[in-house]
Length: 265
Length: 297
Image 1 (cartoon, chains in turn cyan, brown):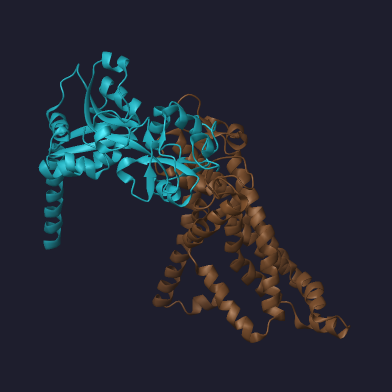
Image 2 (image 1 turned 90 degrees about the vertical axis):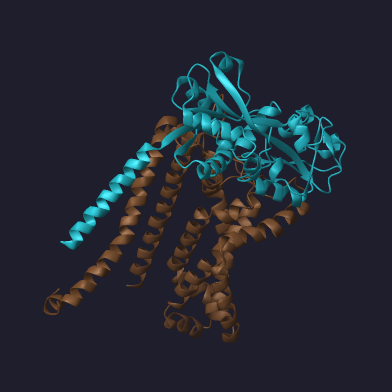
């Protein structure tokens, strides 16, 4: 009998617990898979401030994220590419929460220091295959990149105007693999998020401009992309969604954003 | 049956049940994995089309304009890679086994055997690491390549990796050959080496074939080590170019393939193809082993 009472008590406790979770507000975010890390740290840090709000994330891609916020299937769309004019016309409101700079890296022994965007595009599409053409030694170029599906790869290829057109010598599954292999091969060139590049490789200037946090923030460095939260101007943003958006844009969130490898705008 | 009826004490029965359940676990997992692979692998194949999937030569799953899901480069790379590893690894393995089983002084054999055991115990990521840090830079310098990551590097790593199993299985097969065969051969005036190569090895041929089949299975299924040395671009296989195996194709793209996308589903389909390959090799292996038993009877 005692046992039965106990199990009833446990059941009731459990049910009330379920009831209380059903009361918490939910913010649904959807979009760029490149922003998964950023949303993850924001989710966690935001949850410690306000435990009544749960943030969901679904990584479907920038275009799909903007589309679903405009059609009302999610609260906040996430985009790691600039929002297009057509999307702005349909009521997309842009909130840039962070920036990501893509550094072009070569081996420390490589004397080349500066490339233009057309030169980079020629290297990555296989038109230039020897460092001599770029003012380096007479050695073949090993083009290192990320695997299909990587957000960095998609962004980089779009920024140099060679989307789906790059010919890689090797592909790697992580940023660490790319930097590691560039650091051991004098012929190599590759790309990686600025935040994850260390001093085992040298970072090239692009169009004469060095890749630093400052040049990314002032827009001078061209291989960069924004991390954007997109809302719909035609509908009123729910209170919890507004709270999460405000938090993402606040000073408190900035250190967490840099923790996730992004640069504050 | 009779014995179990006479001695069916409760503890006996409990133990029997426990053993049965344990045996069942393995079977259940095999069935679960098979069903899961088929269910998750078929949708993409249906959408892409079996012919386009198996015989398409371009893998470009995330192209925004014209995605292509042809895995022929990966299938051929896996076949060529495993075959080349067998061609290099199996003869070395068999000669080592003949040496250990017959020709080596017992003390030397006792020294080499545990070393081969150690080779079998080295995790594949360590093979990959050594390949990446030593083999790949050497190939780059010697052959004057942009990068040393290539089918050749993967084949060399695979050939070393399959050695231990080839050696131990063929050594067991050689030792199982009845002594009388060798004695008869020696008595007829053949030298020792002639005896090993003309009598012992042919008598153990199905065991040696089983060793080769086992090595093929290992080579086809290996992922980690070759992920680190093969370069991972889905080119049509060529000895000095970066290539992608079926296994590494799954491993490298699974991380960032968007959930629910055709790319992710296609990766499961690659898994299904790989599974069928391994099953084929296992069936082959059991046929060879059965033939072996038939010989000895």
